[in-house]
Image (cartoon, rainbow over all chains, first blue to last red; front, side):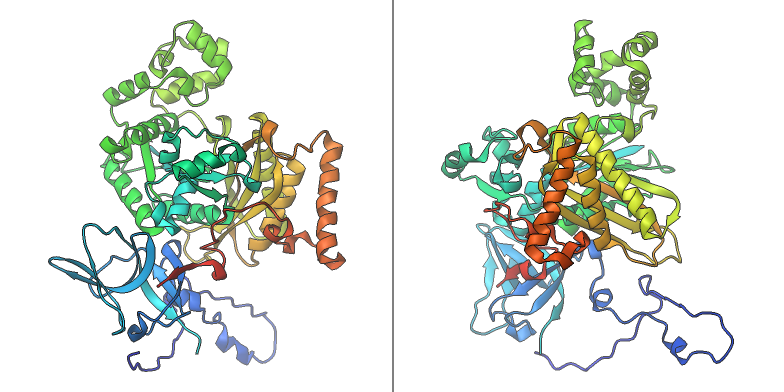
Length: 143
Length: 419
């Protein structure tokens, strides 16, 4: 997996979905210090789901995408609303079988590229039936 | 202008999204307990497998012809349906759900301005986002949109699944194409009478004098005539419900926030569905209950949710259905939301005569059955579990579901696996 900086997430207050539940009662006395924390808890769902209607989940099986940080048993968030583009990691269905690979779109065709030297790239030929099912947007893994 | 969006072979299409190897192959879906065929792909229809075919009689035929058999997976169909309805709501605030896989959209303002292109956008978005193919018919009234939808589906290769009746020529042609028995809202009795006086298609019907129609078919007949002439006159409520499932949904005048208010509404909607089913002598095997806030209003907490309740037996009893609908409501109700719309839909319709457990006699036996269900739960889970709301009916009754696909979208342990 590429080394990545650790990023802390702040609630996005401009986002339509972030909710405020201010339940402060009007009363005499000291203001509650808790009022500074009136936002709802951060929700992973809100962070990783862009279009609810187009979001599906899948479980990784095998090591073919290890290099991209997709390990056996990881949970994938798939957004079907995103356009499949060169370089994206996609869940595809090739000849009736689901697979997750990086898309390589070149002039003479489409390749499904694994990220593990032990696996071979797949060149999609006319005999293959390929459905690009959805684009992987997040990986959820247990550490 | 109205558009009727209708999912193509909905149950079969849902299964194909997660098992694409069955694309363009024959698929059938069986009712609860794997009793009979309740849905077919086009390829299965072409093999001559009839709706309602008893599964046990057909198993060798299925095997011989390579027909893929699925048990009905209502949690999956219900979730896919609510995704589609939610996408449709992005296009217009005027959405009327007609059944689990059909909805009317009303377009105002830019009415005739390239509505067909809008239809293609809707079709493409639903296909891309959910994997479900839809057909769209458009016209100046609901009955015309319905006819347009039929044309779109029937001549799919020519129309691309979209047909718009937007001028007089097309309207007349479409009406002449529609046999009188296929006109929405014309039942068998009226059909016979009309045929006896030489009315064979919808166009001929619209040529009948108003007095005759009113006398023979009441005011509803007259409204239907006007609707077919392109002047919107009919409400979904007064028309025969869809054969695929019944929906009762409402936008509220104001908003509702209290559980008891919603409970009353949901319970009423369920009873209304039951009544409609009794009228058409069918029973259902699952319910979808849904709720949402106003998606077009700024400043309110957005919320939408739906759930599927699978029934242990097919029924059209108002008492039973409203009980189960309220169970579903318990699962999805959230406090602090201003609800604008709610609804109940039925799925898995089977003819009441051929359902598997014809247990209902009079009112008394209905009650007996509810008691029986309660007892069953108590026995299985102990007396503290009496609160039906917490029960997942999927687990309560062991149904025969030998060909059940996974709950890909509602159960994390059953999502697809990718290599």
